[in-house]
Image (cartoon, rainbow, N blue to C red; front, side, top):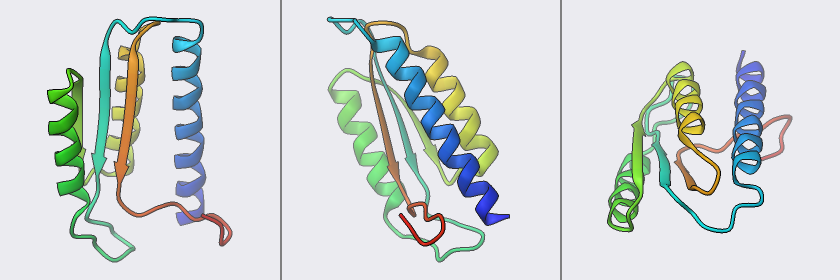
Length: 113
């Protein structure tokens, strides 16, 4: 189950990055500024973290001050995370700037980060 979730997560991130690349290719000037910030401290099968949410909150504040429209996601489950990624990528238009920030445990598949 963990292996499937890790693969699904990796594919979702790759699809998200491809969508951003397609939307931003060939555009010189940014029109909108969007940021998705994710901080996950609580996990079902891993040790909890203590600073990931605070790190995401700090980045949220900094990017808001820089003029970004932000979406902050804390301790999301897989379904909520994937929905937030889909919603975020749907908002990005050609010429926009997009930032994704993740604080939490990394992903390991077959012993490789």
